[in-house]
Length: 82
Image 1 (cartoon, one colour):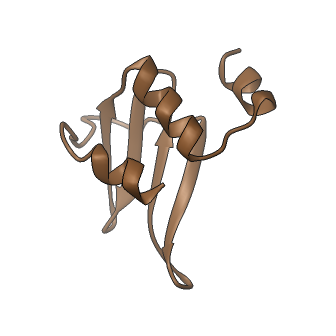
Image 2 (tube, rainbow, N blue to C red):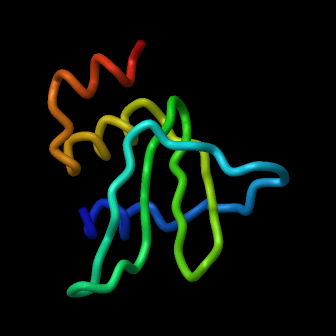
């Protein structure tokens, strides 16, 4: 998961209003300490780190790559694509 997140470091911005709510989200830890979250919605990624929220557009292929890295199963994919 960390490799996937590291490969998607560009084109992030702070939303002008509201934070997009991801359908699938993972929490990233350093030992017992939470460090960041990373999630995907219909056409975007969202992350929270260092006390701030950021988002960026994501292609269907990028979102599928996130699902693969997060080991999202077929049942979760059905919920996501409703």
